[in-house]
Length: 256
Ligand code: PEP
Image 1 (cartoon, rainbow, N blue to C red):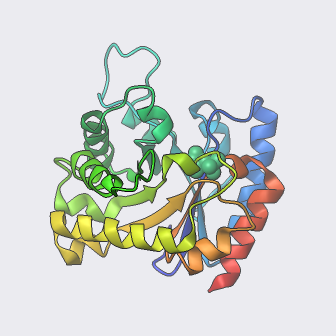
Image 2: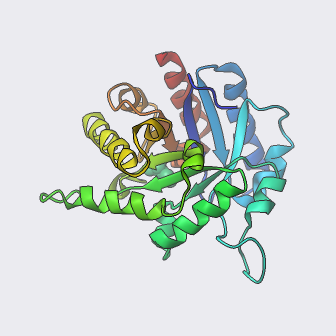
């Protein structure tokens, strides 16, 4: 279980790897780190098809599993979708919602809000992804982000706020060579917390962890955490690179 003092590191495997055997190896490597490193908490989000085998590879709550998406409906005729109960029953505790790669496939803030509600009311913790496409000189990206947060949290009751982790992921940084600068990340973190405070009040807003995602590697991870002052990281492509991920988590573990 995630402790207050721990940094959270979410590994979004995206649509990787292509075999169950490789998935097993990558998961076991993350598990080894999770067992050993006490200042971090790892949430592995593999493709749905690997969740069950990953779940069988550990007993306890020193690491957690998450889905990369969820259906906004509970059950019914929704070919190709995965419901919240399926995720829960397989042992997942977290779910990434509103990832920019899903938003690019047509997921609107309204759909994200419905997914948040379904997941939170079923007891899942949500890693809610937000982030702007570009940083324009007129700073319109701040309004964009504020609106995205407000609309994505529409109808999320105050009591569930503690179960949300906001993953700030500027879209231009995802999958790119360069992450956002730590000082810009810090500014955006403050802005996100202020936006949450406007919606839910300061006390609730302070319960929400804000993490950063976008081109995180072992080279920039420490600066992002220390100077960006975020509560953790959402790691994409490096989360399926055993050595790269091991170095990221080890680096963060040593910060405390
Ligand atoms: C992501 O997929 O959320 C992500 C941050 O990707 P990457 O680390 O590859 O930029």
